[in-house]
Amino acid sequence: GAVVSQHPSRVICKSGTSVKIECRSLDFQATTMFWYRQFPKQSLMLMATSNEGSKATYEQGVEKDKFLINHASLTLSTLTVTSAHPEDSSFYICSAWDLANYGYTFGSGTRLTVV
Amino acid sequence: GENVEQHPSTLSVQEGDSAVIKCTYSDSASNYFPWYKQELGKRPQLIIDIRSNVGEKKDQRIAVTLNKTAKHFSLHITETQPEDSAVYFCAASDNNNNDMRFGAGTRLTVKP
Image (cartoon, rainbow over the protein chains, first blue to last red):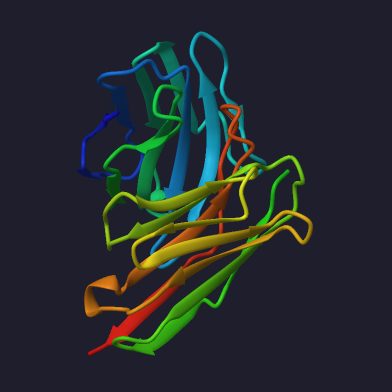
């Protein structure tokens, strides 16, 4: 089946630094990638939707200058958390729509801890 | 945009009993309703989904019902087992490559 590879799985960074998270669709073309954030014991909250070759669409309340999304190819989307702060510590997970299998495929998630 | 509400937030049942989780959605254009099971720190795992052209779907001990008129859908787990214990999320989208919104989640505990 469709696979989305997400890296890194865990990252610890210092406050003020930037962290890049990658999601790659391995055997299908992901024209659209969805980025979610999940705080402990809470649901997955959609942050933004990225479309290959165009600007991402951000949900209300999500700072586009802080969470930079790039979807430069049909198989790669990246989320960069810039100037990270402890409150950005969360579980970030991507999801892509797989037209062939007619379903969403999730990455394995990234646990970000900002110290 | 779409708003998905899910109840209950926690559910505890005895092994062998049934469990029912209910969700409502707001956008009448939504036509794809998946259910996910999530273990702590892991990606959501699709357990069953239903599209708007059917009212019920069953897969062994798991079933989902959809009432488009009332805009609600439910997950039914029969003969629950301890390994069914997890957090379950419902979601809704219009499945035309548009975003998917999740319910708040239900923590199911199955007591042996």
